Length: 262
Image (cartoon, rainbow, N blue to C red; front, top):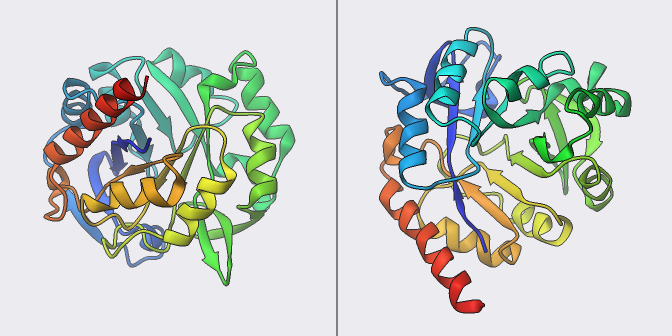
């Protein structure tokens, strides 16, 4: 069943919501900048039982803020952005539940199995500590993995073949639809539907969520196999389309449905 998952996006040391396609373009568009520390949002998710949240570092100057979030909810948050074989274990030691692997997997925009194996080795071979970020851009009827804060297209298409292969080496996927990220104009329904057909491990979709009905829509499109995160539309991030308390209630209703199904 589809659940709401939280996010804490950090840019230049502050929690922000950014239009994803504008990162590193010279025309950065910011929807929201919080005056509250990252730990505030970590505690908010913790206190309301919103598990599986991701903390994403969007460029330099973010490590201290990410550590602040981890200290607020140790052993429960996923950390991504700049993760490599050299620092993956350090993030786990600092309190991350899992690390999220993104651009490091694609040197010169080409997938590297060697680098994936190096990260797994750094994690002691424990794929349960690894999330692979397959955030992508749409090109025609295909989705291509994008790196470098979604500005560079790689040689990997998001499809049944790549999903099946990578599923053997990680415990979850995080997939931002970069073309609609931060726009609050609706999810990429075709991508969500396709993910529902392809994925066999926990998967979180992000991008374009605009109202609470999107949770129901993602559940219907994916057969309950894909979770959803809200960013700019969420009231705790300055949005008006989605109330945090409604997301929490949705997750509670999922737990009730699970109990009734037993």
